[in-house]
Length: 341
Image 1 (cartoon, rainbow, N blue to C red):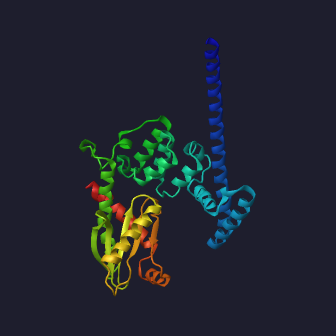
Image 2 (cartoon, rainbow, N blue to C red; image 1 turned 180 degrees about the vertical axis):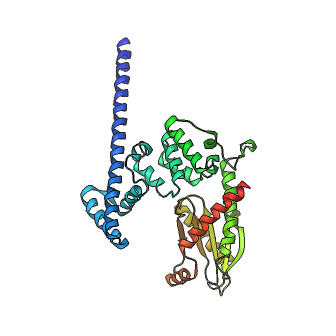
């Protein structure tokens, strides 16, 4: 019995050594890979800057992707190379990498790169390290707009920098990092989903006004329009009618990034409107999904029609994606101000 216990103790000690070594190796490999990707981004960016031609940059990236993938595998796709360039653009000082990205994987970094606001990106990167978030948890936090809901985000820029620095260097968590402002609803025992719904409604209020600014061809029909299918209620965020297109325009707001199920939801709404709301002389309704999860305010327009010519006609009548992105961004800012009042 004593011999078995002795063997078990030795096994546990050796097992601990192996696990520690594995962790060190994994950390070293990750750091080397992140540094490699930064250097690749630097080399490509410097070459593109020399040419001063955007089209040349695209050609270079496509050509390199093909050759690198052939020799080194799928980690060098066109999209991944552009991420490496963006990585270098946003973090041009190499020594900064060792601290900020020490324990973050390349997938973490790719998720963080689209965030335009430097302090916001630093906030998520720091909490990723301190709380050891997986990439899935990170994406969930981004989707729920965690940073915007902290009291920290309302403070002056210099104060935010100092508090994040204190968290990184001294592991000091301040009340502003924990409290949600203006959603201090814990005493009511309400969950984050309630406060997110508040934010969503405020954004929709602002979006409604912005979209009406697109011109006299947009007519407001309803907000949170209820439709019932098989005794189940659904709510369309915003419903407009476009006079020149002679069709309904459905606009759905999603606070996270685009998901495949949003397409099915939109198709359901459009088919319902086509069956029950559309007149004979009107065109089938079209749907626009606004996704606010990425800093680029990733816009997905779903023109769900079989007749591709009609789609082309719609694209010439509706505002461009970039304008929708700009309006969504402004609507989000207005919503945050309104909720603070």
